[in-house]
Image (cartoon, rainbow, N blue to C red):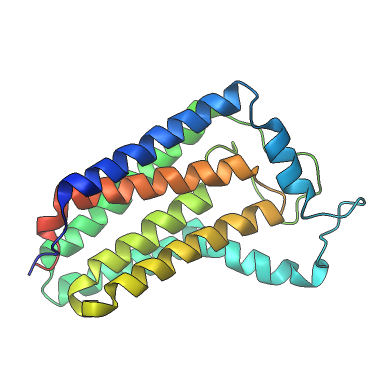
Length: 213
């Protein structure tokens, strides 16, 4: 049975997410986020650039940030789609593959379009390359984990709402780790979360009738 979702409400939420992303892009280009971004990064560091809570947390933050990285997203998302297909949920598996695949293309294109430099206010505590806006790790955490939760809706039953809430919290945590590690501005993280959330919401509004089949 397909997931029962009011598509108009979901589409409005998706549209608001996309609008928020482009408004934030305009604010970044206009220099309106400089003070916010600077304070956000410096609030997590001491005067010498070391984390306020100590370097002992660095391995945990690096591990957390990898939950939005390219390797783990393939290790988690694609096997999940294959499992759904194996269980007979072929339309759901196809929806998940199309949603995630198209999202990854959009994320890669956005990086090339916006070309923002990464922060240089504090030492980076993890390797990071390429443009900074939007945060790809945050984008992927929202897109992948929320997409998987929706894909597993027929198996989760009444646990769907808690699973979605956990996926959203995980995407926030991944985004926080990117700022904590000094490799993204806070506005990069908000942009990644808004774009990733808008993408899976839009996919849900357009393809909710595929879910559960």
